[in-house]
Length: 123
Image 1 (cartoon, rainbow, N blue to C red):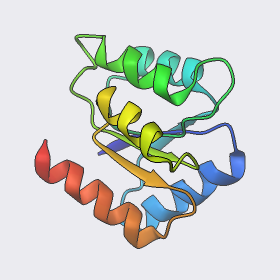
Image 2 (spheres, helix red, strand yellow):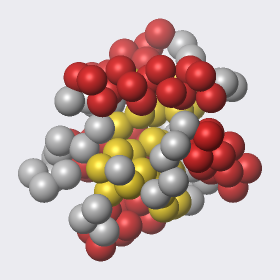
Image 3 (cartoon, one colour):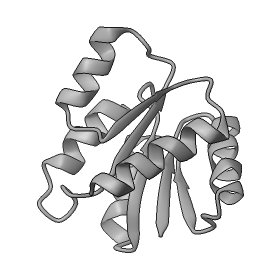
Image 4 (cartoon, rainbow, N blue to C red):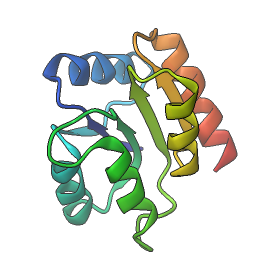
């Protein structure tokens, strides 16, 4: 399964990528913001899962989620939001935009695994 990791922090993309590798997922690509992510999604039909930050320049993670959900070809993609935004209102806003699950940074690889597994069981 191919993942798209979206975060404006190179360090955070590396943390997520290393966590995925440790979980046995070795096929992934990266994007530095939501606009790059949309460009990647438009050109790579093999992506089956999106892990995105919320706070990014250009196109935010929330805007990315809304764009994916509004595109009939992409609408079913599982999306995990990984962000520092942990207040209840933000979580509700993300869930209303139809993210499949939500992780607040910092997180452990085990939490990432649990969230991915929960999403994959539900889709």
